[in-house]
Length: 190
Image (cartoon, rainbow, N blue to C red; front, side, top):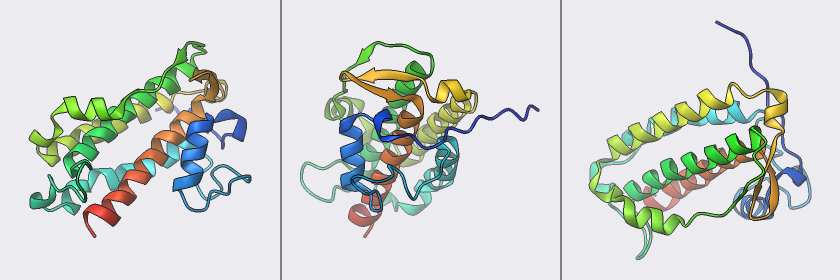
């Protein structure tokens, strides 16, 4: 087995889209508005995602079956929809990271998460299958990013006209999951 693994390092502020930087600063405690972007997190994006994998894999155990369709407020997603959304979003963001790593300069537009959730039918799928899918998606993401070279991690693509590095996209994947897992703990299971 090869010992190849290039660490991503922590992205500089200029490597993030203004949307994601603002979103993360507003929603993750410990990220100062004008300091280090991910001060309290790992300095390697793949390590960050690996750490989350155990938590993702145990989601089925933490949600009682009778709460899988629970919505904490009218118009909010159910637990099943939230987990399905995590898989959809990780796939989309993984593509964005790959495009940046490979030097694709195509300007990528945002996606409509509400449309994805409304058309997915996640509420009809048992949580255990949705978690199995999310674990598979995460393993696929990890398989890809473990092959990134130092140059690939720093590759830049474009989102809504803004340059975004591959490593910033991979950190966004992990931060997005952390935000929703926090919502799951505080709003769905509290």
